[in-house]
Image 1 (cartoon, helix red, strand yellow):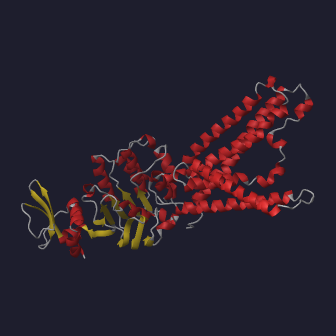
Image 2: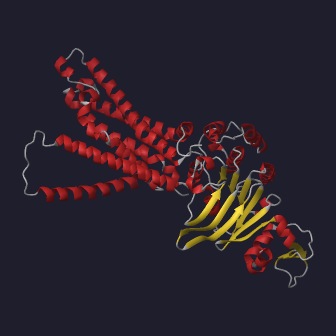
Image 3: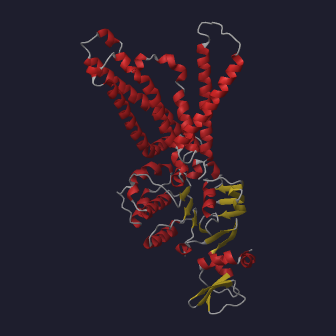
Length: 256
Length: 275
């Protein structure tokens, strides 16, 4: 018997976890759909009072980023939260699946399913409202209407490629928080993230200040922007892998 | 089946629970784990299941290290904790989600046990009383056919008829390849069920002996007056309930509560008898 990974056992584990976690997940997803739809409705409706449409749709970027962050972080923060309670943790830790499979199930639900689910509800809500607006203003200013695009066709997908690792970074950090803390997982993780990012920003700013003081920038096309973006991507991706590895170790060492 | 070598465990520097504990437990036995509150009964069980990690020493269960939490071993461990949470689903959904992890799960046996415990099958687990939930989890655990059955205070929350049913079920659940360990402070609940007593006290195993060995070496009697041969005695309505050395190989019934108190009070007198 393979004590590290077995596909049949992993499938059973996903099914089992869905029974408990699925409810939390679906309720959160329902609330998220409601909030996103409400945001669109409150900003855009009634359509007869709508001003310049493209301007009115600018709320989508902050909504996508802020609410997306909240959604995936809440989901990730609740996944291993039950391990902080003795009564729930004992049965879960003793389920005959390896720690790796339990960790992988956590990664699947929090980093893959939650991100995909949020993208899906956002895309559908956005598409529904944009289609409605377009059909409502069909006879109006065609030039203005042509500028009204769905969220993902308006924003060129390739432009933001280096930041696509960010959802995984967020979920990995909050997943670690859910396995590490026994109570108040979300608040404690958020505080740690704030402290760590504050300290990190302070250090980076000071180092950059020391390194670049008295120097002048030389114009080299895009000033190495692309290289820096991909360097940043590599650093964040590496940090995400480190955080995921710590989560795995923490799960392995979890005591009740 | 279980081998413990020089186990040292503490929750903190000031709270040492086990100092160099060593013992072996075999299949085909029902062990009763006794001890005062805080003696470490639950912690020892958790060590055996790999739920906590010892500072030093070695534990082997079926030849594997429980701390590694390998599925091959977890399939062979049935742990009934004192506190547990069951999801808000029906029994059949619970079985569907969990039974497949145990290759030897016996669905018919599970159904028989539920019937014996008089559990309403269609009810949601969350709507059941604590005692009913406990019976479900005991039934599920036994139906897994795990080789090591660990139960922490299994009779807590069970009503009087259920305790009798529990004893009957446990007695019939024991097979040659199974090892059952039951921790309790309600020693009377385990009367006639356990065949070996393990008593924890002051970070050590104060006593590990079969019921036969105990009654061979000690005699449990009711006396009107006590003399110097008595190891330990407690006043009762008719005089004293006493524990004394069984010099004349007399038959007596083990009084677990009396033995427990005797071990705690007269450790030094009992030690040479069992060594």
